[in-house]
Length: 118
Image (cartoon, rainbow, N blue to C red; front, side, top):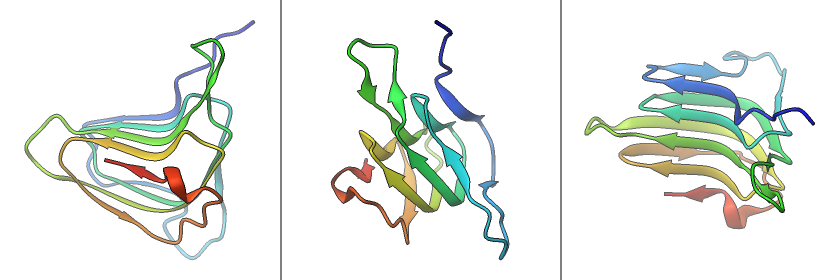
């Protein structure tokens, strides 16, 4: 059996990253099958038109549902996360640790109980 990666996208000390079309084009990004869709450390992030579905942490047995966006800020400078995406069948949609300004809109989630953990 192969090794599953921890995340689809890893950001470390990135300013103003945009994931998604960034314009009026209606093309979706799909994140599935790994522990985290996006892992952002000390980074500013905008996520548009992305769907996080069935993310799974296979590093434990039995496997657990994963996290759509995990963000950590180890600095005193506030970071921003702006999300317009869908979250389905996850442990958490967005999990943050540290100083963040978070704006979540139009998430269209099937499970709103686990969208955001700060």
